[in-house]
Image (cartoon, rainbow, N blue to C red; front, side):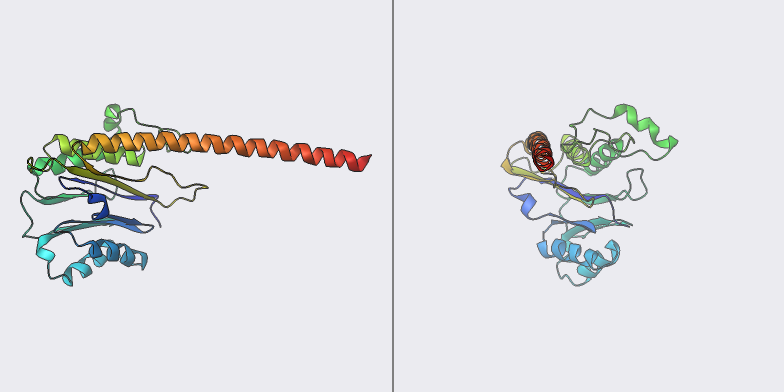
Length: 266
């Protein structure tokens, strides 16, 4: 079974994090952090596409990596998740495996953080706006924020499960971690953030707001949210114009067909 969507989101006090950390494909998503090795992300997604489980794929990569103790590597697929932090990562570092939570399979990891509360805040915010599974999960729906509607004709809550759109939930999770302290290197003012969602559902048009980056800014979360909301608005406008053109074309075709039939009958 393929998941409906796979995702990575990330922010740091360095420029261009979106080019280094998040990787997603049809069968899973992987993030490489701390002392970044982009080949771990690329090969991780390839291994998942070859049919390996996420735990087997990422453990195999770490076993072959001489710098594993300086890495953070985590990922998800349709059936599970995996989180690893090497002992030589810079404190505070750590991760969270949310596979048993109501939000399904997800992971959070970070290094050079102000403390564990950052990871906890990200996980809590993500779960708060996640799809609800059963009556025992309904308590979290009252706190769900009003979210930006998806741009391809879907309602804000497309599945009727109390969930905000996935990209929206990811931005909110990053914002919660940032508010809780985030990256402790306050002397580094240039920051970046990125959002990647791999949608496995078939669509007539790809959604233009699921692969976004803010590469250099002093306000990464606010800028990523603004970029996302503007991209949603632009995608909605484009789809509305396309639908109007399509309907106009169908009406014109109908008129020509009727005229042709009338001419033949005469």
